[in-house]
Length: 331
Image 1 (cartoon, helix red, strand yellow):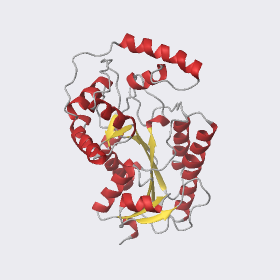
Image 2 (cartoon, one colour):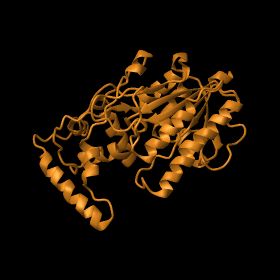
Image 3 (cartoon, one colour):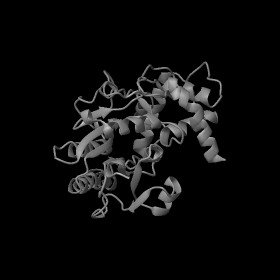
Image 4 (cartoon, one colour):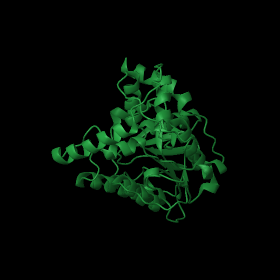
């Protein structure tokens, strides 16, 4: 097979990575995956993927990791937020996300790989509460994760003969097999344990994992993407109440006609703030958690659409598949 069809994928065993590998193999491409655990990777990806075992940020990369490639699609990074702000977390963000990206770029440059696609995050811009930022908006990351992503972006976009870099920023991702907060919310709604939230008309951007992978593959092959940054969303501004009602419908639970008043939630959050300071540990509800739940994080995908991106999924249409995948995993 021609070298141009061979792609190195990092983060291949993750939620996005598995979908990316699936789409690459289905299109007849060869896949090389940089993984931390061979057994886990074999179980997740199957036998048709060439595996290179190495943890980013843990010493020098294998010398041939980027040999004979048409592209690198770099998804891996340190993303855990539970220890955000701790010295250990900040160190991992730097060693894995920043220095790991630097090492991978150097290897790709030495091997003359033509294209390097980096999956970043809207956290590299910062939270949006007003007009939706676009790919040219000023970046004001507020977390160690966001700052590390932004620094890695600058490395990727540094002009060089090879590889030619392109950055794709992603918001929260949904779809079959979803993990994290959306999965927990879906399970809570399904079991009647997630309270009905008020309609605050906040605006949040999301994207289906299959559309996100389609965007990555578009940028991998499109010359007009060279040296640019894009944002991928499904084009819909979701309020938290809309997400809640979609999950009620997707899990076949009736959506309550009532909701917890916003003032009650705000009062509970203030009490949580006090208890958090006294106990020196996180509370189920405080002002920070309420802000993440009911705040806005809305972004524009206009530049990516101009390049030819056409998202095919919306949360409401994807939820039945998400619920079915979760119930299959749980059975």
